[in-house]
Length: 284
Image: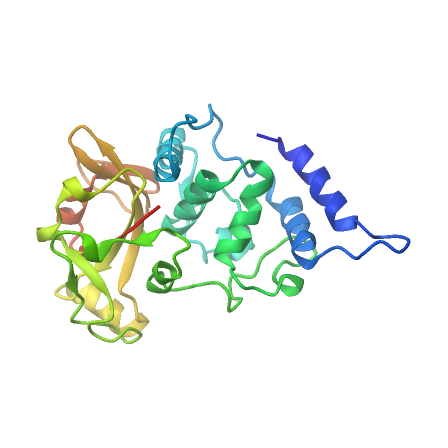
């Protein structure tokens, strides 16, 4: 991979191309990318050997999720909270993660051709269709309130930027009959916990945890905030079945202490966290 210094120099040249004479002006995306690079530092993720060359895209998603969990260098911070990646307008803030930012970074690193492509992919997926002239401020901050940013997980799933929704092809898939204040009943398909077949899950799947309509807290979140999905994780497959790697705000006694990027057996996580009733699955 190119190191960050080389990336910053390259992007600066792109942004300044045409500063004099009759050369064409830099295109808006190159300018936005150069600004973002100046703020976000080295985007290449936790240090270590690169993914094996024979891994497919899904395998690389799992690889990077494992790398983040093994590094144990990040603390949990909800993105919009003070110091979080949303509040700071950052694309890369690997010392602080919530479930969304971990998914962003693991998938961006898995798909990027090199360091020069990581931030570009972040902009093109997190802010697909944005006005590049206004999205990134001169100091490099991005605006997560921009209409191009998808704030609801169901909209993210439907965009296809984070894998193809394979939920309907899985054993036990059913329409969500409860809906929410944003999504009508029957408009979303999910797999309830009791019907989930662990053998159908693959390394690198993104699991979107569905709020259980039978749980009072989850039902309130559906009604008040319009949510269907309440959390996101990445599947890694171990000898005993699928585990989930995620940024956890709370402890799961017997498995991990919260406040970090952690992992637990998926079935145990669903059984213990009562507000989640099952999953939606996207796959690269």
